[in-house]
Amino acid sequence: MDSETGQNIKSDHDEDKTLKFTPQRGGSLLATRRRTLHSECKKVNSSFKSPVQVSSMPNNRVCVEEEVKELQNTLLQLESDIKLLENEGVCVHELDLHINLLHEYNDIKDIAQTLLGRLAGLRSVTTRDLYARFGMELDD
Image (cartoon, rainbow, N blue to C red; front, side, top):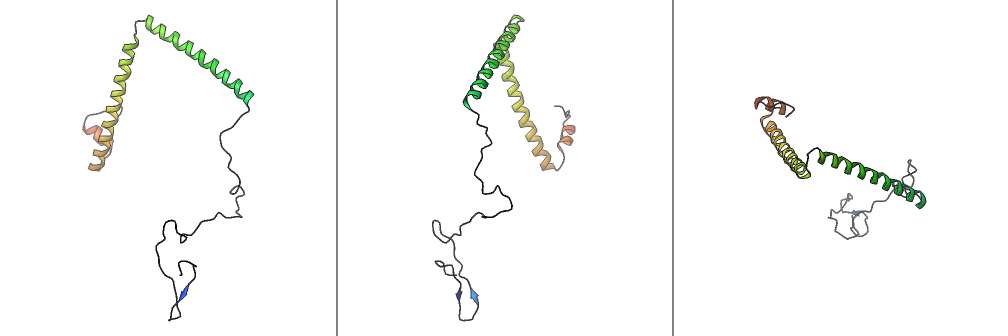
């Protein structure tokens, strides 16, 4: 095949032979793909329609105002819950400490489960078998 014209070249043996070549970047040798003009699916060639629904400004403003009111009510409720907890003797610093410890515990647990899964894969057993072998409950 002639690389510039894309035509077959005939040899002296009357056999069609095509030249093999590596496509070049930016060259005209690469075939271009085109979309089918007539497809059974009629929406193939239609213009793009975003899944995001765009509403008109007046309705949008009403929705935003309602959302702001709901958020303000939620804020008031949360502030009253915080005051109730403080009156019961719970301090914010202590809650932060417990939350940080829970995050650390969950991170360690995730790492342990990953290691158990890898160990089970190496030993060709299930993680359930490893839990039993190490004396752990499945709820651990």
